[in-house]
Length: 475
Image 1 (spheres, rainbow, N blue to C red):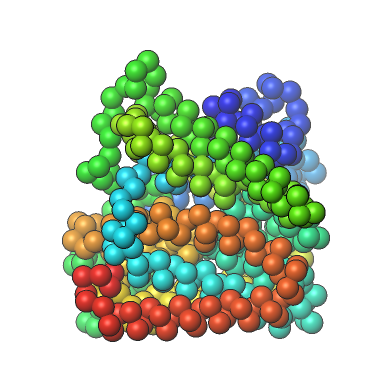
Image 2: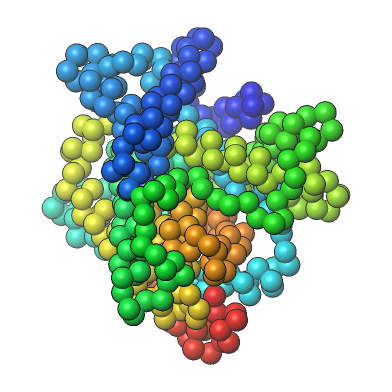
């Protein structure tokens, strides 16, 4: 893993302060925090009833015991040293590259037509979610700017925070700073935390509502019980997952780490190539562009090579998912734990307005638009998109587990396949990374108008496609 860290550090990440011993100790302390958070979750039935992830509990634990909580009382940094906190502040920006490289690595890549046939409606609904988040955010910021004086680039925050998440914001920090919007980072992290928590809480409420509603057909027949205790990382193995045997001299986890590292290296090469190409035209557009969207492409390239040269068997999807899950947990616990409550307090008005609007938009798409687009089992399919629009891909799988634990529908299949088409673009992909530069270049009014028109066009397309296509392909 030190190879991966070195590759990411080479991409200009902020250096960690302190000695190597400080860095190592920070990981030990982080493990202890996570263990305590797991015990708190285990002993607290209300937290399990909310399906609150252990990483979120750990993040709030760090926040309470760190400089923003206990430190305000004692006048120091709380229970954690400044060196440990400096490492935790840097980690999300590094781990986002691991998470993105693992998204599609090890996935079976069927023919593009087959992927589209299975996941087309999921792609359309996901695109409506993201485009609408940009449009809703743009409209609100245009209205809020005269009142709160918020930076116009905050128009991209809902999509960056809710669909993108903590890691996306960490990866986009240089972009925000480059465009004079560094203060928006804390607001975005606050929104991402709200999105992750409300995604689980509101999702559970939607399932309970649907189960009790005679007008909604749900695969899950019995009411949701906290004893089900589904965690954020819950994802059942698929029939195509490789066996957990050893890969010629190295364990599957080691092999997964190697392939993730190679994917990140390919991403770095692609980013450097993009910088070289645009520099010939006298542009420095990609100089501050984040690495993580390119690592998604790097993972796809490595996977394609694995299939082409017949070593696909060596890339164990479960092991890769394990590394990706580790990265997600690290991102969430460190991002929440190192939040600046002072910065949040200064922007509490815009934070509340944007958060309420973001949740309302996700619910609207789920309950109003999605039924007009998904021909079969619309609730299970739509709930997966609700989950990912509020937190991350894992949250989407949690939503499916809530609504369809026995896998009576093909929601998992459609939702999984659509990641192949959308992850490089939306919810932390290239479009997310381009949003702030586009607002800076076009201005927020034009950006909002374009994303609003795109949202409407996608909605019309999705509804018309449902009415004209057979049920078997309107998924």
